[in-house]
Amino acid sequence: MAAGSDLVPALGWLRSYERGWLRYDLLAGATLAAFLIPSAIANASLAGLPPQAGLYACLFPALVYWIFSGARHTAITVTSAISLLLGSSLGPLAGGDPARFGALAACTALMVGAIGLVARVVRAGATTSFFSESVMVGFKAGIGLELAGTQLPKLCGIASAHGGSFWERAAYFLRHLPETNPASLALGLGAVALLLAGKLLAPRLPVALPVVAGGIVLARVFDLGAHSVSLLGHVPTGLPTPALPRVLQSDINELLPLAFACFLLGAVESVAIGRTFAAKHGYRLDANQEFLALGAANLAAGLGWGYPVSGGTSQSLVNESAGARTPLSTLAAGGIVLVVTLFLSGLLADLPQPILAALVLMALTGLVKLATLRRLWRAHRSEFFVALAAFAGVLGSGILRGVLIGSILSLLVLMHRAARPHVAFLGRIPGTDRFSDMERHHDNEPVPGAVLFRVDSGIVYFNAEAVREAVWARVDGSREPIRLAICDLSTVPLVDMAGAEMMAGLAREFAARGIEFRVVRARASVRDMLSLEGLGQLLGPITGHATVAQAVEGFFSEAALGGEREG
Image (cartoon, rainbow, N blue to C red; front, side):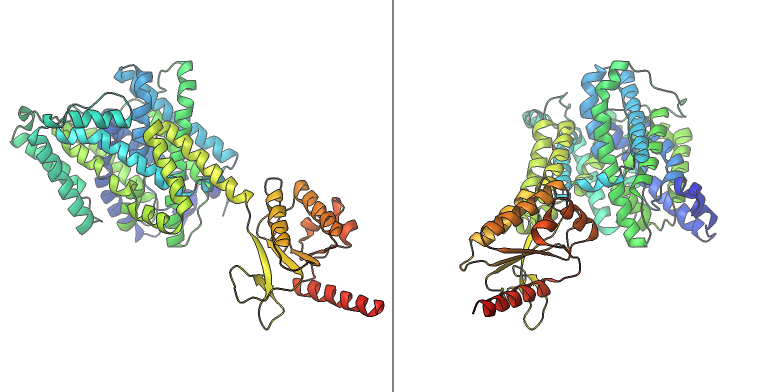
């Protein structure tokens, strides 16, 4: 593919676009827009922004994302997690000024866009793989409960608490529960029931759109505003003039942690969604390219007075299941959002707030994955507690610190796994001259008087000592004297200076105990590093060809020959 197509994937797939795909892309775009519009309005309320900000954030990014994204089915949109993060973080900084709040939100989007572009330049795509699934499961579950805490008062028609932690808002809600407005509760529960039924019975249909339309009709027919049911209120028709938001230089420093958190959430989710569909439809996704697309989309959102966006899981599933063939479907969805923003947004003024709350609460079904938590509890108990820690971090310290806690936990999990590599102790496979892990294959035959081991990772500064400890634990725990130790390096891609020094030290320690030490099947780069640290002088020439079986046979043949000579 040409270099231009690498940077702008649309140049590639547009050249080979088939006419028959157009109707599928247009239909998928219309279906996607029907999902985007209600969820954009709901998420804007979650972010503490007016409804038009949600529409702008879906409109402007959609017009540029399809050009740069290599993902054929990912829908760019506002998400519940980022909306809630934004709403909980900008309030104190805005000081109750709605105009300043909007400017700060738009500035955050611009900063997320800039971070995305920098991440593309330095090719940081591999970092999205550092975040373990268990951490993300716990983090999203915490987000789900935070989300429920902000929306249940709206569902019941109770005035929401301003600020405070999750626990303070929960206590406020319980204290004011007797003030529930029956009309609001009935309307909200009815909307939840319809949305749940639609999700179960017709998951591919945009059920949210008729629920929103029905709520507007009910509000007008029964004058729900007169029954103390809160309505959305005026939504301006038309488009804003693209411009840089007016913020202070000090605001940028304050917003930087929030922008990094939004980018982190958006990047991890967008790449995960894209890879899922890439695997399903047989194409390759470049995470670095998605950083470029995400950066461009957020720059468009910021200039268009929206707020940070990312790939949306449920919206992308809708797009794919509706038959989208190319990213043109997201452009089609953006076009429909444009029409609504220009001509039809005024119809949204009578939308009841309890229905918006119901739309947001439906996001809980995608955020709180109870089945995954149960599986972690049964099969990966340590991973479950990592998820629990991320969950507690969100509820105990807030979403912004929760992102930081989740990031630190992911890195700690990664470091723990890397620092304690698996050291396989080998035994002969019965009837063969091959050796494999005795822990996995209990019928393998140990070699008397020998410890044969294989390290299933690189041997570097932060895990070298753990390897040494595992080997000596095996030697010291043997019931018979050990005469031979063999290290199979076939699964070791890298040895650094500390790893080579550990191997040399192991050789000297074995020699002091009268144990013969041999190294087999080392790669060329590993042999070079071991030789530089003098291991060749201790062990003789280090080869990459000899096998464990040959080393075992050679040692015992030499031992037998030596015994005959002594005799």
